[in-house]
Image (cartoon, rainbow, N blue to C red):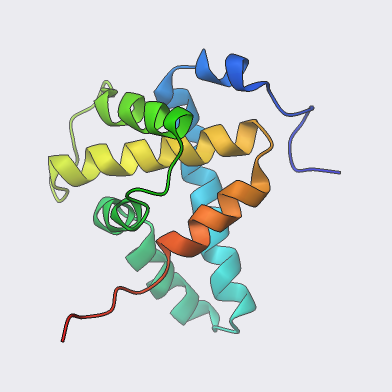
Length: 138
């Protein structure tokens, strides 16, 4: 059983989707992963919302993507490139850095791609890495 309405797409079929379509579903999957993590950590509702807002924005997603640098496969890099270069029909929100917004779209496209192709184990692995706190240099 799965959350998907039908069987996972083949990688070939998923690559034919517009990267903004992948980012569309990836945005929701990312939000679900963040909120689930907060719920299972026993946060109360107010704290869950505050922390979710800190993790589900362009700057946080761009930082998460940076943590994945060098860990993605060639096909995943292609999805990231396509997502980064995709242009929505709306301007970048005023409070977002355009580079962060592009990186966030790239991350969401990758998340969407992994989700629709049924690569949940890979998705969760990359999500866990993306959420590790960066340790300051001494």
